[in-house]
Length: 84
Image (cartoon, rainbow, N blue to C red; front, side, top):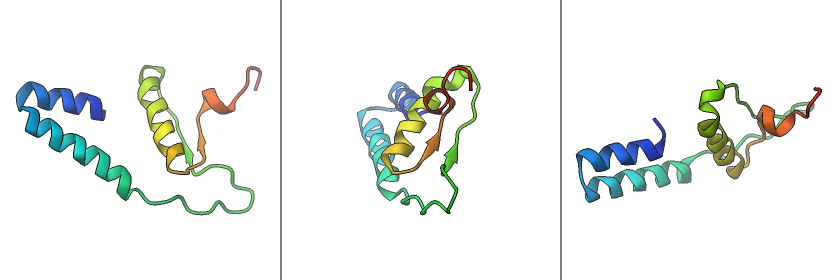
């Protein structure tokens, strides 16, 4: 479940305190995420994202989060050009 959906679900069943707690948890996991390891010689990617098109918005968000943490991420719509 995406963080946004989680917050909405909690808001619908809980209250403001639970929403704030969930948002704090969502922020703290990113603060604790490990830095990516150095890439070995000849390696270009830390992560290869494979997905169904119905999941594209979620995967694009994941791509942005991983890139923000310094990971080299293969995402077809970013890396591939028409005709590849």
